[in-house]
Image (tube, rainbow, N blue to C red; front, side, top):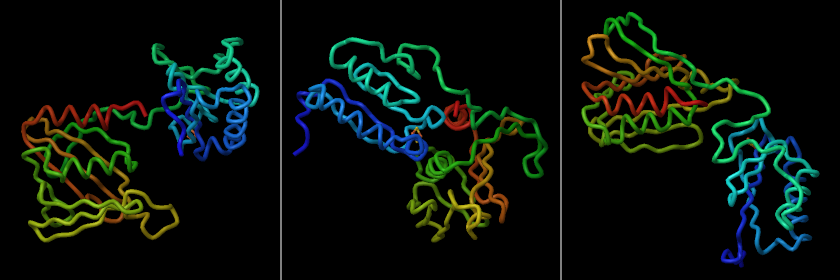
Length: 259
Ligand code: FES
């Protein structure tokens, strides 16, 4: 039977993702659980091992839910101080806090360059004339939702072309499987596979989406989203007219995010 959660007043998330494991996260997990037990905090504190918590440069990382605090570079000594603090209120375990909710700035081990740092550029496009465009970082946590944005039919007025065939938003079945997305379109009886993730030495690598572009014509009559791979060039294009809400949604959530 699981722990009686009515007795829990603190939950500690302990990252056991790849980078944290390289920094002894498994040992730290065992030690914090041991220290909590010895301090009589087993019932009141719940620990959860997680996969990567997205702060690898600060590994090994923990997060305490009750006080909304992220801890960086955890060590046995820091665990001892944290548990002591939880048990008695003594000591100070805050020298390695990465972020607390009320802070307006993080204190990372090192600053990292945002993945999406590109700015809008004005270029001449063979098909659309002068366009203003911005690159979106082509990792699968962008490309997978973007494919769904294009094809699930939520946004009206999309015209979607995939390599040489039309795909009809709202008529597509989208299935994710091991770094690939399979799209079957009932209306055009088309089916297509997009590679979102592939090892550099695999035959799929040249089909992996490696470039994503969001654009607007300077004339202001059309906006679009284009996905490219190395082998085929442009593989998916969605265009639409007059939808500022959609444009802003894509800029804010895909192009102008901090990492
Ligand atoms: S592996 Fe722990 S934060 Fe990424």
